[in-house]
Length: 460
Image (cartoon, rainbow, N blue to C red; front, side, top):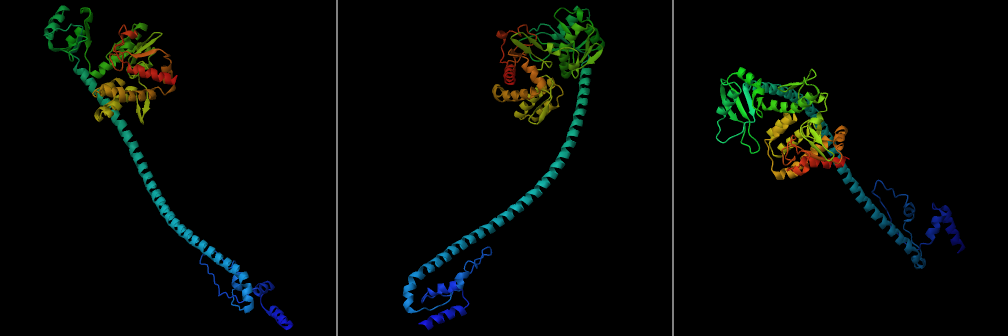
């Protein structure tokens, strides 16, 4: 027995294993573990160190039969632990395989995204080039349109001048009562004879426009000779009271004259030497037209506004409350020179009448824009819905600047009314009506005045 133990010690001393390893081997009897090779195929995971002890101990050994039964219970747990460990590692390896597959898929998707972004960048660069090119073309077109507008205005002025010249032999007579079955030629000849011009020759003579219920129509008289026209015009004072003699002009010139006339009356009170010839006003040795009339040294708002402590009535381009008041405003990217331009243009666009819309934009004066847009006649229902919305949008843009806002809020809490014959936008009475400041006499909806009061309350 002692020799046997001695041999055992000798084996331990001469062997290549450590004492701890000999101690482990002494506990194993008839326990055979076939060679265990664990191979890991994942580049990112290195498991050799983890199983170094296991590999060194996985050699085939035979122990005495009488000790195998005794140690079986002790060797079973390490076997199960090793199996569980291998199973756990396999599961992790499978999970890593799935992750690697997902990473590969993500790499492909990322490559696709990068390619798409690169393509988008190329497309964006191309779009920028096109935008730059279009911007240059747009600038050129704007210059061209500006030049064409200038030429158009010059040609329009020439046409108006030519039309005015073609009407130089005409006179317009107002105040002659209209009769059924009348002969205008005979009535005018009798009138001229009454004032001492029996031998004046007439080319033609007729009432102007369709018959009206509210007043007598004017009579247009075309004379054969221009000197006869001059003689009649210079003898206006000889005609009976209530009959007025006026020159005949193109519609555009008439609107300019009507625009200047209220200022002329106000200027005449200050300087009796003030004169007016055609569409030009001369005040204190200076010439004024509709283009520069607001620079005149007068309170022009007086000629277009009347007020009491409770009511403000307005009409015409000299009142900042009026749509005809020239002022710049921007709506939906377009710049307009009056709220009348804006409303008429959008109204024509809504009706699909692009030619009328273009005519509105080309109109120099607000009065011209109103005439150009009058070819489109919307229904009452459209005005009450879409029309009110467009007008409100135009007014908000108009009174957005501080100086315009101040003019509206200065009205205080007074009733604001548009003194025009319109029974929709106005009060159904002209500015010259003696009842213009008496609300109980109004017979119009005054939609414009209502919108102005709503906006005033918002801005106050």
